[in-house]
Image (cartoon, rainbow, N blue to C red):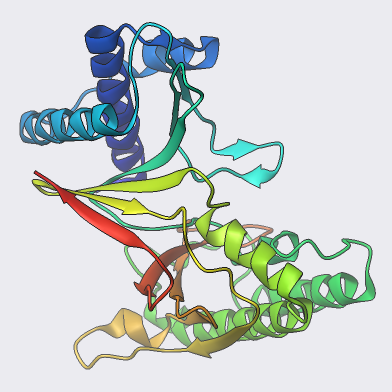
Length: 302
């Protein structure tokens, strides 16, 4: 499925839930939510996907009704991908007349917790952007990018559904070096519980009144993140997961974050363009591979 179709499905799912809440309980929509509703109402969704969304919407609305006092005094907002604090993990925010609030991210057939690009990791820990540590990382990154572009020049089409064979070794070395530099930077930056927790919040969100709602086929899972144990340290590894029948695995690298609260997060790199850009178009798919004993509470909605 293309990124644009995934995006359309996700936004339309938010639209359906907001529409159902507004019609059923007469919730007040913020101006931002009204604008998003108008933007998303005409998106084209496959009939089977629509039916699954509709079924999931009813389950999610019933769950919200059990948690909040929903009426015409409740306020619904649809949240942007980024806010004044940086990354925003929540998609919908609802506050009732008793000032009880639920913020939740909505996942349509995927469970990624974060989409941050590794080339921007200097912004993830709260380290002073003018510090020697950040400057060292930025300089290393420039050299690494310059080196790969001597082999894959800017403007070269080097991928189409995968990296072309003649560029795979160069691409693999590039990602390895980029990940190593990021790993070393983040390890040094997270020398205190505060910076470790900043990294944790960047990837997973601030906690507080936060939930994740995952639609997986016909199943709907609510993850309550309000009581997650805060980590004090993190170990970072840069690894490959090579499998015999998957050529891509030979040039894909993973950054694995192992926090001391038991949560393990895997970031798999992916090229986000067929063509080499001045700043290589990379994105990572960040998934929790182990919640450990972190305090997460999962509920399957029926």
